[in-house]
Length: 149
Image (cartoon, rainbow, N blue to C red):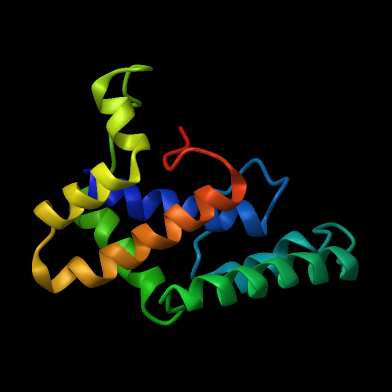
């Protein structure tokens, strides 16, 4: 489940970054970000487009994707791969108790990397490690833990 959680957390992190200020992200996926930018920046009643807000979200999206691309993230592969991993491995059912060994392990990139290397089949390992590198990058950039509960 930890492997699925890594993929899930990266997806949530990307969505939260692009749609900062949005509290509900139901129905949002990394794959449908361009459509959701249009939806979120358009008033449902009047149909009026907030072009400034749309441009802001679009800039955040392209800027982030360029940074993640440098880490090997592919918009054509990894959104679908992430969905496959979450569906295959699941996600953690509950947050570990604060300050527990499990909690500390989930906060330590080296422990998680070793866990991934030990658990993941070799045919998936390269891309899982890519997702993990992207998650570590985003956590470092926003100063938050790897797993946000």
